[in-house]
Amino acid sequence: MDKIELHAHFSGCIRFTTLQELTIRQFGQDHEINFKKCTTLEQCFILFAKINSLNLKLDDIRRIADEIFQDFYNDGVTYLEIRATPKKGQDFDQLQYLNAISDSINKAKFNIKLIVAIDRAKSIEEAEKTYKLIKKNKIQHLVGVDLCGHPGVGHFLQFKPILQKFRDLGYKITVHTGELKQQIEENNDVIDFKPDRIGHFIYYTEEQLNNIKNLNIPIEVCFSSNLFTTNMQPNCHPVKDFISKGIPIAICTDDTLCFNTTITKEIQLIQKTFEYSNEFMSQILKESLNYKFKQE
Image 1 (tube, rainbow, N blue to C red):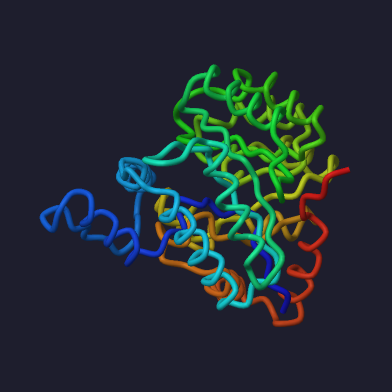
Image 2 (tube, rainbow, N blue to C red):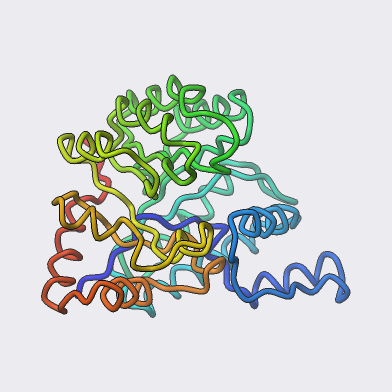
């Protein structure tokens, strides 16, 4: 089976052992993290806050990137799109941060592309800074932009003009939506924008799902992520509905650290839950190769 990953967050895929080491280095042994996996959405963002509190060096970013890419390679992934929010650290700015990830991509053993993430929980001004950074500088391997962050904060329409600016630069757009029930109405604005892909989309109306199908917008399915953050039973996940209606999907991890998962685990979990054959799963994975982001 061809394994590809189209929805993975850089900060959410750090090796736990590395996160533990970096945390102890900065805060001391008393701040050792007791963690197995996130079981709620809030736990995810608490973990992200801990990761973001680390005052990292550029060598740390390179190490984290090298390890993430090696882990996906070891899992048999042949194509990866990694999404990262530009950050500053001890000895680097946002541009150097993205370039460090790009440098690690150049050393990787398989095909990797970069997606810049816009955090909807942050200000419009911060998103505008990211846009200006990308417009001014050529970022190697960059193919798209993602609107993500806590789904209970902000609204898609606030960021729509900036996403359009990125689109005008030639970048593909993916948007997290339908991750919470309260986002169902917001889904309409996202769908009207016609993003190139949509992430999660587990809460929706039938009309919205039909619109997704008619527009042929692929859905990035993050099975374990959705189960843990919503307390949903596996056989209730809408991926079966997506597949039966002929809606394009890509099986993704979201965050390998947060949910202690891999692409292989996600594939096996979906296959076992819905009793799909190996041949059927192989076809789904083969079709997902068509949903990679490519610049025009």
